[in-house]
Amino acid sequence: MSEYVLTVENVVKSFGKFRALDGASLAIPKGCIFGIIGPNGAGKSTLLRIVTSLAHADSGRVTVNGIDIESSPRKALTGTGAIVDSPSFFPDLSARLNLDILSRGTGKRYKARRDELAEYTGIAGWLNHRVREFSLGMKQRLAITLALLPESHFVILDEPTNGLDPSGIVDIRNLIRNLGADLGTTVLVTSHMLGEIEKICSNLAILNHGRIVMQGPMEEILRRSPVTLIRTTEPDRAGSLLKETFGPRILSLSAKEDMPGVLRVETDSECAAELNETLVKNGFAVSLLEKEPDRLEKIFLELTGGESAVRKEVRA
Amino acid sequence: MILSIYHEIVKLTSQKKHYIMLLGYAFLMLLMVLLFRHIHEDLEKQSGEMLKEMPFYLRMMAPDPVKLCDGLMFSRFTGYILFWVVMPIFAFMFAGESIAGEQQDGTLKAYLSHGFSRTRLVLAKFVSVFLIILFYSMAFAALTMLIGILFFGFSKMQISLFWGNPGDPGTMTTVGLVSAKRAIWAYFASALYASFAISAISSVSFMISAFVKRMSVAATGGMVFFFVSFILQVVFARYAQEIEPFLITRVMDGYSQVYSIDVINWSSIVKSFAVMCLYWSVCVTVPVVTLNIKEY
Image (tube, rainbow over all chains, first blue to last red; front, side):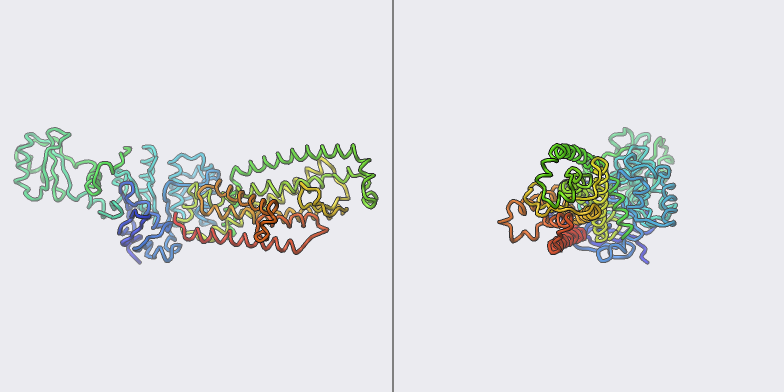
């Protein structure tokens, strides 16, 4: 058995002259919550459509659960639940009928699982209501229930928090985070909302111009060139001291423009405690010591190039 | 497969189109009852004159022409409009909705991304549309007869007619009398035949719905095809002799044959079924192939 639930190898997909995927490669280990972020037009939706056999790659190979998606799509997608694009249901049918029809579920075992999952996702009391009456947040919950129904160990969710209000975002975020812990499900999430991806995912891939420009565990990515913000007395002298003491470990050191008296120290590895100790031992009073916020956003901007690529995040 | 067909029927029956369909049917019934009542009144006024003009054998068998114009006659007369005009329009709507409607609202993607067999999906949709047409054809036929009997009574003898074209009295090639039992059989047999024919006619919309994302386009496409076929068969028949056997409206020819059960032209009915099979085969195969190669 493969240790990866999904592998994508050098996948190319073009629409006319536009190359939506240009040799994208990634591997999703079992049991993780994997996020894919990328600017508009980076190829996220195209990649998901290929992974779910809604579209075919021009070249390259995709395996789901170790099975080639092109040669055996139905076998490969067994045990995989996917919601591509916004969740779509039959508005005049009840949530229960929608689940039954879209999952083709039948039998006692299926019904027990459906009711159990509905309880888990918080829609148990709404199963007999028509989907027309559902809010977007409820539809997302229903979509997640649907994705989990075919005894899924791998769930693909495309922009699951898109269009939700702040409390809806928090609810869906918690639900997705718990999927791995409670049900052992591997989850693939795409989003524009970097903060959400940072909060939800254990692993991350950044897609730009049809290529994966970075992937790995979230912690490692965030730890890469960590930035510490330090407010201290005499920041100029403090900066010189840190440069002398840490030498090449400090990759860059500058005054933070929007926070007077604060130094922005980029290091090759996590060393906030050491920076603090050095300053305090040398008589500097440190009144602020913290990791630079929105680190993922900055890494994303560095790799994809430009503020315009980032959608403004709705903060919960 | 049975589960898939059941699900498709559940989806189709949940749509509001059914209310429109029932309203349309109710409106048609209202108009037909008013029209038939008017005919009834005219007949009552002229029955004496008409009796004198009637052939001797008809006068002997059914001396009162008003009695011949009963509820069953009403339903047989209404059936023509119902199955030639109203039901095809509804069938185009259902067939057009089948695939295009789901492309339009995104639910088709939800199906396909779960790895369902696309061939089975198309077949289930096609069969469910046919079953809906069959159900409504038979239900409307029964309801129309009940309404007719309720308003215009029931007579034991019925006129046996062969109407090639309801708007052209010259095409009444045979007139005779048959028992009511026989006429009821003919009436329901023609409704059953009509459901098959309407299914073949609407299969054009079904095929178009695999290519477009709007059900209205698929339904309209089918209607245009139907009316062009009708115009070619009726108006330009002289110039369309080579393609005439393949015209979709030809399948309705058998309706008149079954309707006048005394003079069934089996050769014509077999030809009509052959044309139906041709349309069914093409209009199912094309969506199966399309869905299997199309990207979503």
